Amino acid sequence: MQLIHHPMSAASRFVRLLVSEYDIEPDLYEERPWERRAEFMQINPAGTLPVLVDHTGAPIIGAYAIAEFVDETTGAMHRGHRLMPDNPIGRAEVRRLIDWFLVKAEADVTRGLVRERVFKLQMPAGNGGGAPDSAVLRAARANIRQHMRYVGWLSQARDWLAGDVLTSADLAGAATISVLDYLGEIDWTAEPAARDWYQRIKSRPAFRDILGDRVRGLPPASHYADLDF
Amino acid sequence: MQLIHHPMSAASRFVRLLVSEYDIEPDLYEERPWERRAEFMQINPAGTLPVLVDHTGAPIIGAYAIAEFVDETTGAMHRGHRLMPDNPIGRAEVRRLIDWFLVKAEADVTRGLVRERVFKLQMPAGNGGGAPDSAVLRAARANIRQHMRYVGWLSQARDWLAGDVLTSADLAGAATISVLDYLGEIDWTAEPAARDWYQRIKSRPAFRDILGDRVRGLPPASHYADLDF
Image (cartoon, rainbow over all chains, first blue to last red; front, side, top):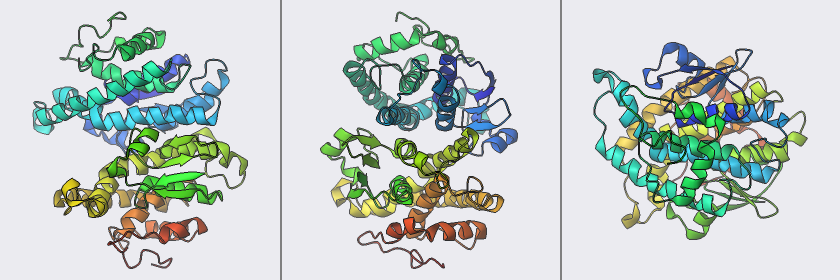
């Protein structure tokens, strides 16, 4: 399988974590979504990441479709460590949280911060590149606090974000937070329960690749890859 | 079951169409999401619509979780007219399109137009109400043309948006377009194939309720409820 992704896309990281938990190792292809390459736009006219290409060459587009596809074709065979609960209400809670991180937190925080701080570094100056817009950064940073408070609340109330066991909801949350943590945007002193939860998930083998990600010209926060931060 | 919704929320209309196709008739409760009522925020801290409350009182939050819940608990029993294909690649295409309409078109078009033209009418003047922001309207309207072109292209290439048979993707598309059509924002002369498709889906019994929706102080476009428009 192939995964078309960007290392600083939270939805891409979510899918990398998900397939890695199931020991699937797709070949990774980095796409710069702002370039809107014709070949890529033909596969996914929305121009968004990630896209998984299955072994028959069929593209599965977007984290929502990919998460369900991986659960149906692989997770369902992993009784005991499936990343989706067996009961429909439990699954609804996992999906609510995936949506929370990959749609709501993405819109409130991640998309703007990544565009301003990462993509603009990689874009040509005449074509969207340049200095970050400080109003966008300010708004995103105010929202991070709210989102981290919610993650802290969930981590305190439950063993894992959606309940008693690790699920895809934890992967979606950790994917989002790992992007923000790379950028040094998370104040870990404010939410100790969230920190404990993130430390547990960060220590999983599936996380190793993500802790090795580097963006040229933008080194990660010094504690980014530390398991004991 | 109960459905907490707003008549001009595309995601709410999608779920109303979905349950109606399966002959489920939840009691409808209208929520004004901009009020961020404490009781509602406790059920759904994201403050978004819709929320389905199942017969045990468990809330299922957001169109993504609800669509999968309804498919798992009801659709799977409707062999022959299930609104999700049986094969994983087919389901991935339906989910891609649900995401296209309820996340992408929502962000590009629907959310802004509905806020400016509908919600601001219903909000108190001191609290967000007032005249629409013409810059938001202009941007949304430019995006409608792109989205309608894509619906036109899909309608020409396929019998239904995701393939040979009616699926949830058609309901998500029609839900979004019905909101815009109420507001008179769709130029039907530009995309005849999309018009044929919408006419077919609009004629289904499940659509009747939605064609009867009215917003106080904002009558629908004159052709809104016509099956032959």
